[in-house]
Length: 120
Image 1 (cartoon, one colour):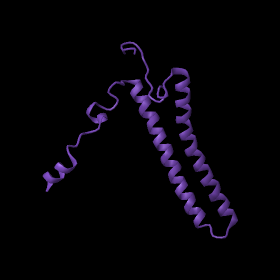
Image 2: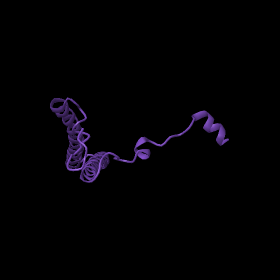
Image 3: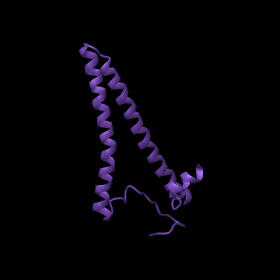
Image 4: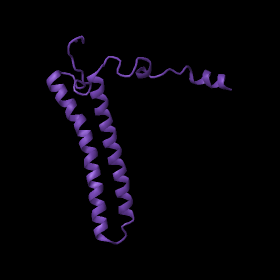
């Protein structure tokens, strides 16, 4: 049965990040900085999503109380604005990278060069 499944779907290869090593061309401070930025974006997105779900639940359970509805609606609006700020930061980084470096991913894929690192 397993051989049949492997014949149907073909060989499975690990993603290049695993086979090449995550951040293989980044070392030291660059790798740390990129990982911290990625972690902050993920944590910010998760916080905004959880806050949005909780505010939606508060909105649904508010009943006829206008104060609770207004508070829940404010939380929903703030959560959506937080997600838009996270998305907007990536859009602005791509725009500035395209203007300054002629590469939209230049600021999204940071690389710091110092002694002992090759310059490209």
